[in-house]
Each structure stands twice: as structure tokens, then as C-alpha cells.
Length: 136
Figure 1: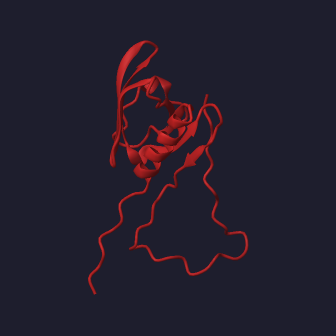
Figure 2 (figure 1 turned 120 degrees about the vertical axis):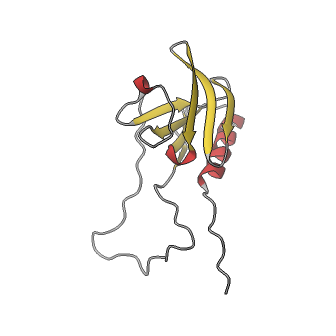
Figure 3 (figure 1 turned 60 degrees about the vertical axis):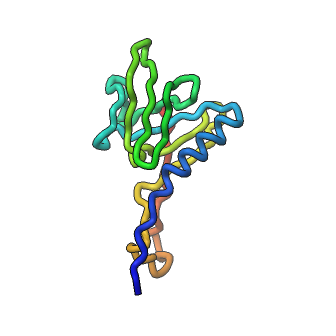
């Protein structure tokens, strides 16, 4: 039996969909980014607790591209231009500034090579849900 190729990450597709949904509804999409991930290029003076929140609206950015591997755009921080570039895997979540509605991404996306868990754990070993802390 031939082995199927691994599935691509859902994250960039969900990120693009949520960004479009927020934009279409007149909301301001903000990205929560893990600034400690290799390849993240953001103004470091705005990083707090290893994370940065970026306004990813079309009015705050220029040349916004959300590709399967990278997010990139030009923006101004305190009036200074900066080219933001980050791996999609560094995006922890996206939310609308006005409502707080959005999506948190899991740390890992198991592919078909990872066996499913046999059953739900009993006792106090239930997995914790990811939590998003809004940094203002």
C-alpha cells in the first residue's frame, strides 16, 4: 500500500480566511506572534513577554502577503518604516480588535503519521486548551 504524502498545515489557510472575514466585516485583524521563533523579523522594542501583537489591517500595512510559509508586510512603528516578516508557524492567533473574536492556533498540527490517541484519558490528565492573552 502506497503511503500518502503528509498534509500541509491548516494554519495559513485559516489565517487567510479569518483575516478576510474580519476585513469584510469592518473589523481590524491583529496577529499574536511568538517573537522567539527563528525567522521572525519585527521591531524588537515592541516585543513583550516574547510576543508581539501586530495590526494586520490593510490600512495599517502595505503589501500584506499571507503565504503558506510566510507572512510579510511593510508597516510603520512610531513613524518609522519596518519590513515585517515571519514564518506562519510563529502566528499564535488572530483576533478582531473591536470584538476580540478570532482564532487561536494549536502548537502542533499532527499529520497522518501521528497515531490517534487510543481513548480519552481518565482522571486529571485532560489536555489543557490553549489560552490567548491579549497584550495591549
